[in-house]
Length: 132
Image (cartoon, rainbow, N blue to C red; front, top):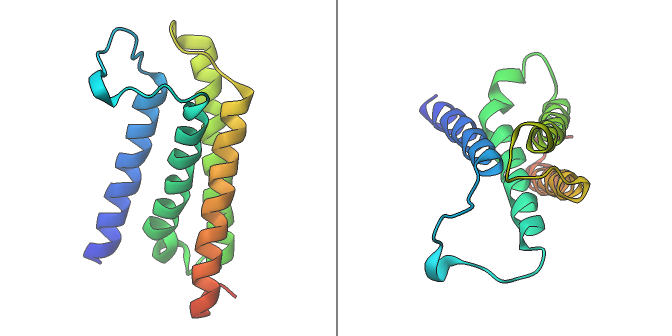
């Protein structure tokens, strides 16, 4: 029970973190030695954000939905949520932020990260037999 609550808190916190990181302008923020000069590193960050979102979402919600849906269907709903959420964030970047821009390639990186999270969860759950 506490484990499920912890995963829910982590999942919601992750969504808040992704939202803030995606909509906040970092223009003028001194990054110091933490700054990266790698081309397209933002695509990797998008991938990681949504990869983790799917894994945390599955861990947070698997027990809540197991009486209504199969684990496989729960996982698919979480992936669908993550992809739609990523698209909404990109639209918000395009429409309401001044220093951020929505990018179709970012949405693609979000979706790819979500699908890879799906594959990781499926591979680990198939191994223990609980996602058949």
